[in-house]
Amino acid sequence: MTDGLDFEPQTLTVGVGDTVDWVTTGAVAHSVTAYEEDLPEGAAYFASGGFDGESAARQAYPEGSVGRDEVYSHTFETAGEFPYFCIPHESGMVGTIVVESV
Picture (cartoon, one colour):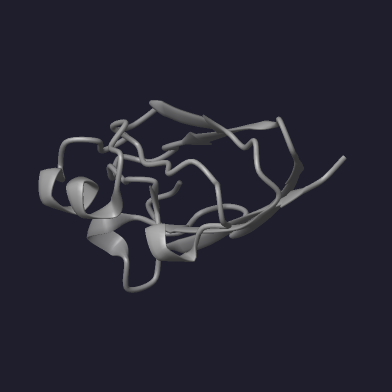
């Protein structure tokens, strides 16, 4: 996650059971927040800060922010596409994790 307000890469493909680490490389703090309604059926919700839903993550921000050199990690156990965003920079800072069955 960069000061350019983007996720690099914007789309990442991983396998079921893989863990993704998001690292803030710049000075601006970000969040990693799943679009709850767009998750694959049966998939676990994920958000930096450990929230159990999108509404809770939005309401609590800046709790759950990931600051400079901090890391948020999530292990994906379900195949499918997982769209996510940064709460304060949602207008342009969005990404997708594509999880493929191995």
